[in-house]
Length: 221
Image (cartoon, rainbow, N blue to C red; front, top):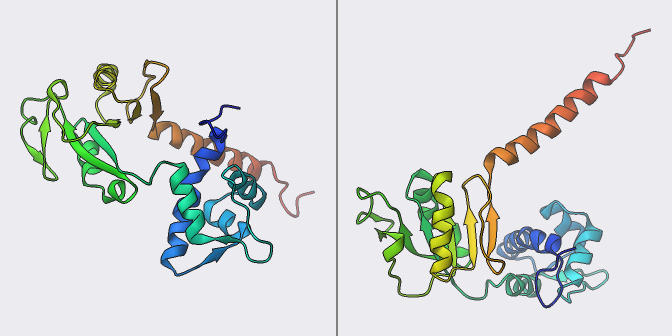
């Protein structure tokens, strides 16, 4: 199993940490000071045994009969995810999706500060979106070095954009464009493909339909 860092936290566990943090944040907003692994698992859609195993990688163990301290656990998960500092972000591609992401307040509240917007369309470059001037990526100027790049361009432009981001020193890329990106080994890429997610959903729906169709009809001889 791949491991995420020097602490040896499995990648599968890392993938579940944001869900735990979202649940813990909601509980904290409700004034809850503690939470059991059963409840946290139910909120995050994970079995309680898996919750306890995942959190043990962070060195966090609940108290029998009490559970986990909500605030302290949220701090631990945030620290593990690197959310105790702001991460400067550039969004490349100012189509509908890029503009929606630029306007999404959830990025800033989770530690991702959009510091630059980029596009190669001459009619878009120089315009302002959410208070930021759209720049050309090859001439990008920011107050702080960008650490995360988000690609929302058409697929045929994504690789060139990724190359440019790598040239700017970006080591973390989130892409909404279909197709694999070829980047150096020290660059992490996460791909969001809505069509793939929908296909996974339809697979499960198809399986349910087949199961229902195979059930014997009541009263049939």
